[in-house]
Length: 129
Image 1 (cartoon, rainbow, N blue to C red):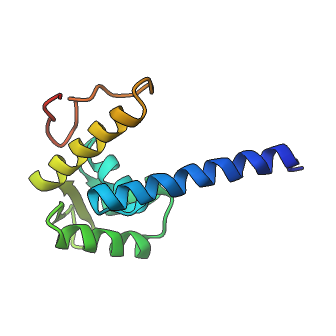
Image 2: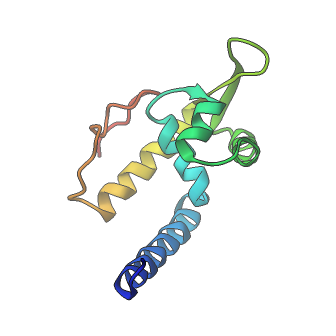
């Protein structure tokens, strides 16, 4: 059963997420889901289906996000093994924006533990500040 303490914790987390999304929009022109896609693709290309699974969103929702990011020149979509599968990867501009996101993350959360070193991105590398 959910307790009042649990609900208060969720409220605080939601407020932090809302603030983070406002910062992403102001500084990088991204909403939270667009930023999640760039973060995933910074680790390397993947199929649209596996990306939807990783993000836990419907394929239709992901398609809208990918279309917006592709129109902005931040990602590339290529045919996969067959015509139904698409492989998604970062463009050079997408990699640069991902690097900016990580720089901002390091500024905001300097002691955060990262599963992957800053410069070891699957889609390319970032120059460390």
